[in-house]
Image (cartoon, rainbow, N blue to C red; front, side, top):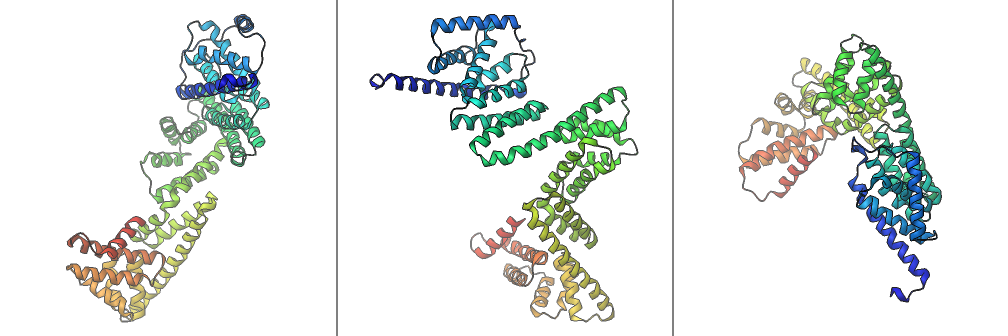
Amino acid sequence: MLTKLPMKWKSIIAVLTVQFTWLATAHCQMIRISLEHLPRHRSAVPSHAAQAADRQYFSQMFRLKYGRMNAYTSSEFMNYLLRTYVSFGHKLRRHQYVGLTLCWKIAAAKGWAESLPGPLLAICWNYNVNPWKLLAQACKATFPNLQDHWDGTYLMKQSYHWGRQAMQQNAYLPARRLLATSFQCAQALNNAWYLRVIPTLSRRLVVLELAYQQHLADEKDLRMKPGDAAALARTAVYCWLMSRASDAQAKGNAAAQHAAYPSLLHIEQLTRRKSLDAVAAIDLGDLWWQLPSRHPLLALGPLAHEKAIKIYRQAAGQIGDGFTELIHTKGFRSANRFIIDARRCLTRADDPHLESLRHVCKDLQIQVRILHGQYAAAVKTLAASPTNSTANQQVGEYTCFVAARWHAGLPYLEHCRQPGLAGAAHADMADPQVPAGQLVLGNQWWTLSSGYHGLMKNVIRRRAIHWYKQALAKLPSGGYATVRARVATMEHAK
């Protein structure tokens, strides 16, 4: 088939075949070589005279082997360089640096973005060069020569990926250039996701760069004045923010010895915990949020607020459980203080996805405040009139359905004016031991829960589940599908 095609199509197919070979080689090299763990002992870059001699050697070799330069001969020459110096290495390393450099420069001049990673990463792996500066230079040189949509998409994604890696290695200037190239590609391709994400990442890059410069200045000050409390505090905060816990712990303890930095010790204690409940998480977030106003963190202030917001978002899913546990164990005042703090942290987070949760917290706070007010008034009424059915019901509902102190609240519910509620309370106080009676009592509480909402509804249903579980433990497996489904629903809701 190939011999019957015109010469023009033969050349095109050959070029495409070579390009697919480059692509496979490049991806293999990207998997094999990691820029985060480069060898410590890498070869020095050859001198300018040695590079000039090697360029002359490759020029003569090209003229003898290929003659004139065109798209086909360039791709063939580049494929030879890839096979010789990237895929299988080369025993004569004196030509390797210039060969790899010619390889990525040909790819950049032709706009073949998919052929860049192989030679670039091989140079970074074998030679003592600044990898991020080299990658930024190659991506910038490739962008004006892009030929098609696929190369543009590849360069956009690859320069964005390298830019993020450079940020993690504190190489902020090359990272800015790599992200700029990715953004230019996104503009050319009209890619909405990258056009939205890259500006946000670039603003974060500026904040991180200022914080890093501040950290370097603090490290310099500490070498001259090891006991400088402000520099110790900022260094500890930077280490915490960058997840360098061991350094942060030592310097945080040193700074916390000064009377002006007690909050650092509290942060260190909370950070050491393996898991944080909602109360501790909100306390930790508040400490991070208030840290810039309490101490001169300078350029670290925005990162401290960002850390606080991240903790708030992680704690958002535990707010309901934290409130329920507090009101059951420590009472209304602790729970009310916690829900106020939770609403404040959700407001600070300024996340549209958490807006509904903020409204739920507000409704929960209002509901419990009203119920606690009614409870306090009913307690005073019962002191003067112990048989008042309305007051008995209000005290019993708050004690059982809000505070979950069933043994203390059931006697009040037994004297309420609602027959169904009084009957269920009476049956519960009788403590049935037969499975049939336990199922009936569970059904009574489950039916009564439909007349309530929010926290009270959940607490009543959990009481029903309490009796359902006792009954199911004594009954044979199978059957009672409705009861088992209710238990599974509440267990999943936890």
